[in-house]
Length: 126
Image 1 (cartoon, one colour):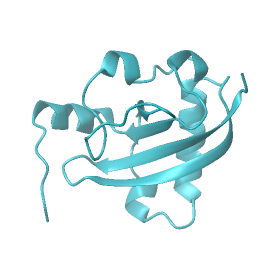
Image 2 (image 1 turned 180 degrees about the horizontal axis):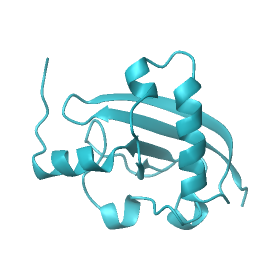
Image 3 (image 1 turned 180 degrees about the vertical axis):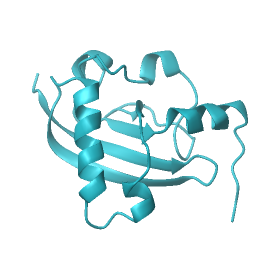
């Protein structure tokens, strides 16, 4: 198994407004811990050209698997609200041990926002 992968990270700014931006990372070392990857992505997002400032300055703290290559996709537009125990990545876990593989799509969000939305999953249209 190759330990280098292409991962898509969906930066979730708002669940209610379905406000997110996908960012693709190539040559990601899947042997690193989730915490190391989160630190890398936060650093990259804060300086990445083309991302609006609200996405650069947001306090992301949690990653969850949205979709894996050749797997079924959710009907939710931002991400599924189910299987948190299995799909939310633990900081001390290696990416491979958490089930992350090549072409996995991850959501990166603020846990407090997710919990609030999960308690009342209503979307707003503007």
